[in-house]
Amino acid sequence: MRIKLACFALLLAIPFTAVPLAVTPAVAASAVEIDADVNAALKRFFHTVPEGPELYYRAAGVLIFPSVIKAGIGIGGEYGEGALRARGRTIGYYNTVSASIGFQFGAQSRSVIIMFMTDRALREFQRSNGWEAGVDGSVTLIKIGAGGTIDTNNIRDPIIGFVFGAKGLMYNLTLEGSKISRLRK
Image (tube, rainbow, N blue to C red; front, top):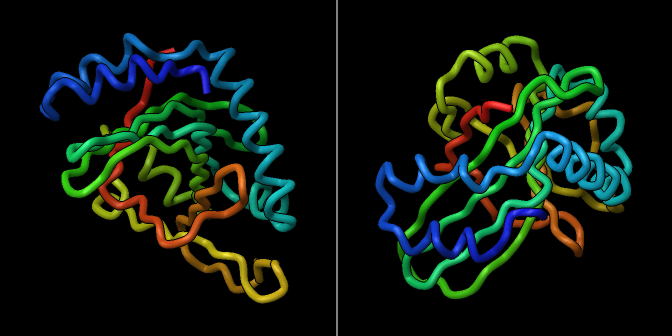
């Protein structure tokens, strides 16, 4: 939330090469700012998804991106910063970056939560040097079922994800192609 849209617009103005990836740490929020935003996003998530706290505490690790901003005019991109938590404490800071080409116009902000449900999935994520959703690990996006609930007993996937905005969980979205890298804080 503290990422200025102007900085993101500058990122979009530069062709999508290795240059924007080198620029992103310059607009990085502080660890204190990220933690505050993560706490607020978790509060919204727990309010939106009643089963959220159970899944959060059952997961080996949870990656929370409070605000992933997507913008574009023909060529688009998205960027967000967040924290990896295990047992309720922050164990690392990360950013997510992706680019796209095609019909698009405008900007949108959303929150993304990725839960590593097994120790193995968490270890593989932590050992990676730049993890890409859909390539280095498949993320199953969870949708709310009939009656507005999630059947947590049937979640067997090692990595699950939630995408939500101001109006609740979002549908028909994908995390594939999102590159997640560790930030040095």
